[in-house]
Length: 405
Image: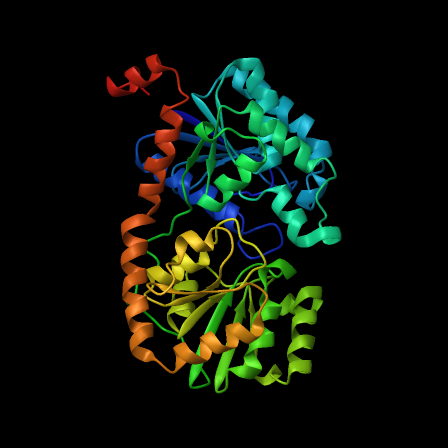
């Protein structure tokens, strides 16, 4: 099958951890790689944000990345990209008129807008993964939400126009239904985890305290690192490692890093908080394995890949009971769920688990089993292909069975 992945701001080749480079980049990269392993032809279309980037490049995993000229060839915050989606869509239409894909899979709402505009002219079905919804972001961020004013209206329009929607968790299904999307139009395909990279055995970093808690993500307020810092005074003899953001040498220029360290100073735990900056994919498994607990306490989370990576490493997870985390972490089995933005309850949960190594071990074993049985990228690719099969014309499906593309 010829598959067009559209990911307007999240280049699958980008380094993770910077602003606007996180879970979506990884999702697109790993899903594309898994589909290529299954014998499919995948092209990822992403906006060109570097004047020196080639027009197209083949990733080592086998998929092609096309850098779309839409807007300036420089980094632009994703919330400022909407004016360039018309140009992005026109480029897609020209490409697909010459060589139409069998199915388009759009990632994020602006990719969906560009894809609908382009696919309408060439008669190709569009599958949409939102990754995050404007109604949820507005609910939790309020006036701090920097999304374009038309985002929620356009997401509803996209939900009606696309052929099918792939939600990443059950919570998102309910949100889509409240937006007016028919349940029959929605399938669920979660994010996955690299089970060759994230394993229980391997190198482990050494900690500086009796206990270590690790939390990972982009340095933005909604990731909830402030909640972790606020809980730390109630968790003695424990260090907190915050991984993510720019390279370590540039953390002093990052306003969120500065804010978090000031919070740690005021809470009297600055000596127990370490910010590593960006951590490479090769280093991440060792960092996660060094933890007694991996912590994920966002205000909201459409899915959350870090808990899966921790589970695959056999490390128990404490997570806020929001969004996709309620699907991933089985409370009392692979870890524990806590109310969001409640540092007092978080501290009590952390103290209890750090004092109970047998429970932590049991959670780690169960988490590893769950990650390996449900969340391999090959399994996610099969879930995704089932959704494609529901929208691709039947004659094309027959061609594939007979050995066609």
